[in-house]
Length: 278
Length: 117
Image (cartoon, rainbow over all chains, first blue to last red):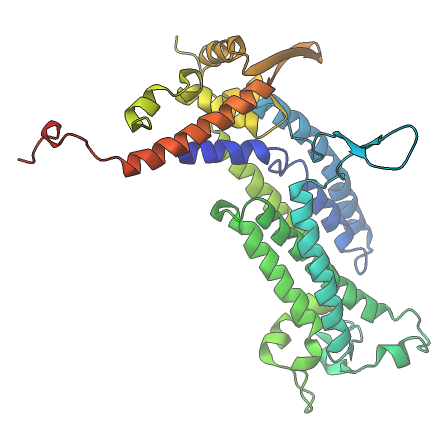
C-alpha cells in the first residue's frame, strides 16, 4: 500500500513534467532541425529540417489534447506559499504597518534544475579557462576528425587579432561543449528534482554522459601530447566534441529519448482505464 | 495510561482509512486540484466506485468538487479542502504513532498468549 501511495504521489506531483510528447519530444525535434544548419544547406536537408521544425509544433499541439483526453488534468500546487500579513514595527503615528510576509519562491523542480545548472556553468567555465586551449581548424571531410591541425592556442592573444573574427571553428567547438554541459546539468537536475528515483535513472545516465562529453571537449588540451598525437579515447570521441552538428544532433536525440521514456513511464504508471462491469 | 495499538487502530478515521479513499486523498494532497479522469486513472477505480467515494469524501467535507465547461463538456475538478488536508495530516500522524506503539507493545497478561505448539 505504501508503495502504491508513493507512486500516486509521484505521478500526481510530476504529471505535467512526465508529458514527454508535449515538451521534450518537440524540443528535441526543433534541436534536430537546427542540427544541420551549420554544415548541411542543400535543398534536401532544408526540406527535412523544415519538416522536423513544423512537426515539432504539430506534435506539441496534438500531445496536449491527447494527454488531456486520455489521462485528465492536474493543477500543480502554487510555488508561492500563502501570503500572510505581518506587522512591521516602525515608529509611525499611524501605528504598525502591515507588510506582506515571505518571498516568492521558485517551484522545487525549478530550484533543483537551476542549482546544478548554475554549478555546471561555474565549473565548466573554470575548466575551459584553465585547460590548455586548442585551435581546431575545420576539415573538408565531415567524418575526419581535425586532430592533425590542432595546435596550442591562446585565445586572448590570437583570437581578437585573427583576420577571421569571430573565429568560427573555435566558437562552434565551444558552443557544442556548452550545449552538452547545459543539457547534461538540466537532465541531472530533473533526476534530482524527481527524487532521484531508480525509475527515472535514464535522466541520470543521459545527464552524466552529456557532462562527460562536455568535460572531454573542454579538456582536450590535456590529451594532446608533445609528439602531436592525442590519447586514444579522445581520438575516438573527437568528432563528437569538435563538430558542432554532432552535439546538436546528440542533444536533440537525447531530448527525444527522454521525452519518449517519460511518456512510456506515464502510460505504465497510470495503467489502462478500468471499465465498468456489465 | 496510553491507548493500546488495538484501541488506536479502532480510533482511526474510517473515512480516510479506506484504501480507495486514501488513494484519492493522497493524490489530491500532491496537487492543487485534479479532474475526475485523472483520479480514475491514478486510482484504478471504476467510474461508479470513484463517484461513490468522492460523494462520501464531499459529505465529510474533506474534498471540494467543482464543475466547469470545457469545449461543451462538463469537467469535474476535485480539490482537497483545508479540513481534508488537516485530517490527512492527522491520519498519517496517527498511523506513525500506531506503528511506534505496535513495535513497543507487550502482552500484559501472559495467560492470554497461546503457547507455541
